[in-house]
Amino acid sequence: MSGASISMQRRIAVTGLGVLSPAGSGKAKFWRAMTRGELGIGEIQAFDTSVFSVSRGGEVTDVDPASLLRVLDPSGVSRTTRLAAAAARMAAEDAGLQEAEYPPERVGVCFGTTMGNHTVLEQHHDEERSGNEPDIRLGAHYPYACISSAVSEEMGCEGPSFLIPTACAAGNYAISWGKELIEDGTLDAAIVGGSDALSRTCFAMFHRLGAIAPERCRPFDLDREGMMVSEGAAALILEDLDRAKARGAVIYAELLGYGLACDASHATAPHPEGLGAMLAMKRAMEDAGVGPEDISYISAHGTGTRANDSTESTAVRRTFGPLAEILPVSSIKSMIGHTMGAASAIEAVACALAVHHGVIPPTMNVETPDPDCVPNTVANQAQHMPVSVAMSNAFAFGGNISTILLGGAAE
Image (cartoon, rainbow, N blue to C red; front, side, top):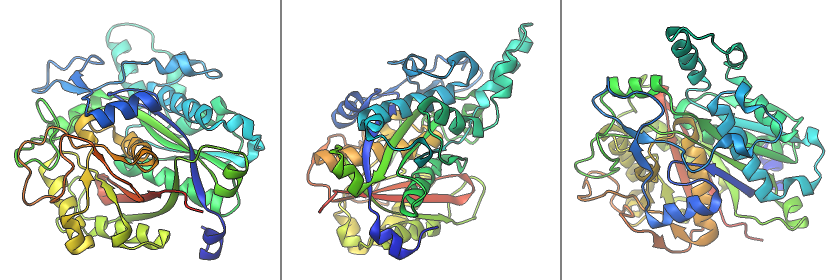
């Protein structure tokens, strides 16, 4: 890991954004949907939901990720990998990464995931049950590390390639590791993000936990009923800020800092006092050299479950004190559902665009704000205001917590 002196020497720019989400794919379409409050939840088509009491979720339907691939054979890799590689391709083209002419060994990859290539096992199971011969190529692609290595292959990256499986906090973990690799001089640029395809197994797990809402996700609402299981992917291009400026790259935001924690409290439930969340937020601010008064906006984990929203609200109140009363908070999961390992990566894209455009996306479906939750929810309509520093939280099973800070790239 890099020391403080190195961190001060190298600043990290976000120069490229790629996203595939249930509400829209591609930077422009995604951001338009987020700022207009468009919902991407519908009846699930990927598998038969008749055995469940709920049937809605989020799917990427506006683009076939395979159509964006130039190197990989889409038929030989999982949907999670196709989504990851497509997001990486989008982000690299957005950044003009090829024109930067970085040596391939100086460009690395780090992706996060929750379910990894689990859909490969589900497909194998379905084919055997139907009497068909399973595709052995997909079986060979099952290991999670195949996701990041496939992105490296698709993008011609020869630097370090990591896959981080810290569940729903994994996207922020991946972004944080990319920051470290640039700061310590290992890389000139990193392709970081997260990806998860819609998995029947994942849906069944959350269904058994009683955590899925029947119709819609309503974070921080008094009558919230749960989350929505979804799929998606996002990638960000990170570069040394000085080099990005020198080549004339568009700089959406600066990655200011990160904080990681694990409260190790329960396999599926957050710590009731939000200890891990508090620690991650404080560590992120310390890493960035900012204080609570410098934060303009919090992109909440905000799943819409009673436990998560209450715990996150407690952590925000305890971390920010009186500032929590006026600090804008929103959750885009109200529009796209919970995309698992892709969630915080997609939310990082939203935060970078919030900083870049000065717009905070709303929490949709709020009817009666829960007085015990965050007091200043940006409800049902985007808020136009300067966003100097955006904080993005991600919580996961096992108590894994990750927070990142994105801000304007000041001189």
